[in-house]
Structures are given as structure tokens and as C-alpha cells.
Length: 291
Image 1 (cartoon, rainbow, N blue to C red):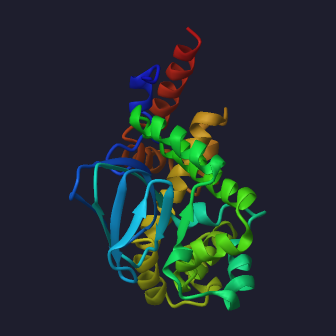
Image 2 (image 1 turned 30 degrees about the vertical axis):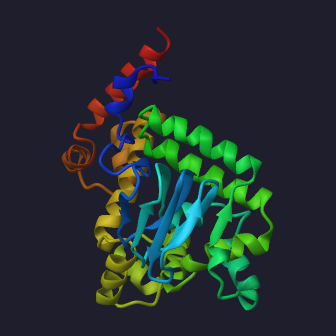
């Protein structure tokens, strides 16, 4: 089914064609799909079968109805044993730690002593609910939906389904590979980001030197602290422009811009438009929805 108002989605700030958070991959027999290190990925074997090779696994056979988490520090190769389709979901640390009612960090600490060195514990098998979720998600991806906001919601839905329909031991074993020093660092960043105003304050709160924070951010987020903070600010500003009736002067003041010109320059860099242009496009889209 083709989405309605396709052009409206394409011009949205949240539309991400180059690096969608979730993608659908079709492989013919003996063809490879590679995942590079630098992000956590969950790969769902939607149909067919593959051999998986990564740092800890060598030619691990997986079949339709199974999924595996590839942690940020690993690269992996999926080789199709026959015609195969994969759903590939990229998880940043923000989405993994988003639910206060599902404290993954505490869960991992609780079950850490029971961890077995067994390849099979890394494979999560579909139950009825997860199968329905994956089938629907595949339809969305194949329809050409590439909205970062929507995909973040689907990732949170996936985490919720895992929490509700799988026992805690299974969840622990599946997510164990992401529980490392990087996970703890990123969790601390998200917990403290709204409590500080500058990178220097963040470094002090996390007990890092400025150079140490720079190195750690580049390793965990693949961005400098300044670049990462600017991206977070851009997301919040875009929401304020589109979803509130506040003046641009009020928004600029709240986000610490020294002048309207500085605020305009920021919006041109991140949204390829002025604040007025962003809001006007949003209003046009809203009007079009009700025609």
C-alpha cells in the first residue's frame, strides 16, 4: 500500500532516506549483507536462512523467525543460504534506555551471575506477537516509510513487546552484549544532559576531563560532544517550532541563542530553512491533511 501525501513526508526534517533506522534487505542465495561496527543492530531473519559470522560467532546458522543482536563494537556478515529477507533495526543508546519502567541496566545486573557462554542464548525466537510486529514492520518499510520519528516509536514498541511477552532471563541473555562500559557511559549522559548547560559542566558531572570526554563521545556516539549536543538541540527546536505557538524570539532565548540571526543560521544549517520557513511548511502540511 502506498502512503498518502508522499511528498509531505519527504520534505519533513524526520525523513531519513540515506540512513533509515530500520531497513529491509533482500538477499539471493550466497549473497552477503554486512554490518559495520559503530552502532547496535538487531537483525530479524524475516524469511529464508543465513550463516552469521561476527567476533564471537562463526557460521552460526539462523532461520526465519529468529533474531540476533549485533553489539556496537562488532561487525557481522550474513550469508544467505537460500533466498532470504532481513529486517535490520539500528538501536542507539537513547532508544535502548528510553523506558523508565524497563530499567535494562538493573535487569542486566540482576541476571549477570546466571550468564552462560552459549551461542544459543543470543538468538531470540519469534513468538506470535513478535511475528505480527515484524510482518507489519516489513510492510511499512516496503511501502517506503523512512520517518525517524515513526521508527523510534516502533523500536520502543519492540522493546515493550520484549518486556511483556518474554521472561526476564531471555531478555537478559539477548541484551547482554550491549551491557558494557559504553552502555553505562551513554546511560549517564542521557540521565544528566538536561541538568547541564555546557560541555564543560557535562564533563565535570561525569568526572571526565574535556579531552577524555571528547574521546569517549567519539567512541560511543561517533560524534564530538559539541556535534551530539547540537543534534539533540536541533530535535527539540524542530519540535518547538512545529508543535507550539511560541514566538521565535522565545524559542531562541530558551535555547541560548544570542540573537535572531544566530537562531536563523542554526535553523538553516540543520533544517535547510529559516524558523519561519519551517513553521510555514508545517502549517501547509497540516492544511493539506484536512483538504
